[in-house]
Amino acid sequence: MSISGALPKESIVAVIGAGAMGSGIAQVAAQAGHPVQLFDTRFGAADEACRTLSATFDALAAKGKISADTARSASRRIAAVNVLADCVSARLVIEAIVEDLEAKRALLRELEVIVTPETILASNTSSLSITALAAGLQHPQRVVGMHFFNPAPVLPLVEVVSGLATDRAVAEIIYASAASWGKLPVHASSTPGFIVNRCARPFYGEALRLLSERAADPATLDAVMREAGGFRMGPFELMDLIGLDVNFAVTRSVWDAYFHDPRYTPSVLQQELVAAGFLGRKTGRGFFSYGASAAKPEPSTQPPQRRPTAICVCGGLGPAAALADRLAASGVAVERAPMHNAFPDGAIAIEGGWLALTDGRAATSRGVAIGEPTIVLFDLALDYATCTRVAVARADTCSDRTWNAAVGALQAAGIAVSALDDVAGLAVMRTVVMLANEAADAVTQGIATAHDVDLAMQKGVNYPVGPLAWADRIGAARVREVLVNLAAHYGEDRYRISPLLARRCAAAQALAD
Ligand code: NAI
Image (tube, rainbow, N blue to C red):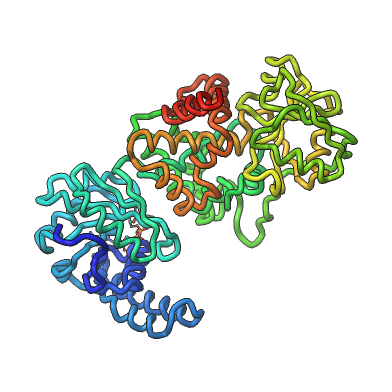
């Protein structure tokens, strides 16, 4: 490659495929100052997209997001072309055609004889191997993934994906160009799902498992993930938005690509919904019903209980330390006592029983194992000082007195309580440790750096904290403990701990000793 850094603004960017993604990418490139050519095999599609983009620029100007001048010049910079051969002068071609390996390979072969050998060929594929796309081309080193997220003009993340043959200089030019277009690029190597589509699998996978174990209904699980986990959307409403068919297909493709690793096993429950045609918002029914007459699903919330007069916090509560302060501020008398032998990680003694943070065991089995059967477990929260809801589960052996007091204490602190069935690891804890585990595996396998994985999950799917940073907040030892307990509970390889997390845990322990 004769240039380094971002492509100069005068370089022509050709976008092939004028659908949702192609149009969005054309908008981004034109707003950044590049002349843009738009091509689509569907008659009239590129012209139509240009007209729509022109209206989009006018609307942005009317809202004051861009100046009228910028709108006019961006609009003028985009032109529809009628034949692929018109892209001869393009310096960068970004394909955003149908997600089909053979169609994309045929397009790249055709492009190779049109454009100069210097031209970069980028693919917006979200699931196909960049290595496979480039194979057999004359210059496979100039093929690179440039994976935008939908809607491309809004979401900042761009995964710059290198296949086995991709020249590092090519990836760097795309990285620098994406950054100069106002995007947040991250480097990734070409592996199934790249960073985001792979590392996000547990967000859906654990939710689907919880639902199939009948831990709670979708509205309740969504509310817990939003209000305690700090996620912008719950997994079920998000799957309904994405489309259950699309979400199921992505899970399936990652599962297939990893030779049926149980980490990614698709859900039979989701498969049934897809088979029924209940695909989410687009069909009016998925996990929820849509349409004018559909009632907004409400999470199930425990009825009010009396606040306990006194509780005793034994030991530190680790990541839940702020909960004790919040309880104290709510007027409940909070005593402090040293750690109790049965709860080395801390717990709250309450009305003849215990309230403790989940450690990945079900409440009943944990209570029996430690000889404290009157036990209620609460779920992880992103921030116990501000969360508005938390999930709890009671052991089958727990007394009503302890249960009511535990619910009452949390309510006194202004926290709505959602009772889950006695499932291992509850909802937020189980999801977050599995997200961190997946992220750690992606780092272990050299798919991306820890920094880029965390950034990608925050900017690509709006997670409130990167999964690895979140694991650090929880503490490596506790994350490990939850995974070990989940693995023992289910007896499945799905919950095996990533070597990187195991290493972080060992290092943290060595420092503490
Ligand atoms: P789309 O179906 O809206 O648009 C695809 C366009 O490509 C259509 O207008 C079609 O006529 C055109 N096309 C098909 N074959 C062509 C060919 N050989 N030459 C020129 N044009 C051709 O699809 P969408 O959603 O825009 O996706 C495009 C690509 O972007 C796919 O690879 C997809 O996996 C990827 N992607 C999609 C995201 C999404 O949320 N929709 C997110 C990120 C990536």
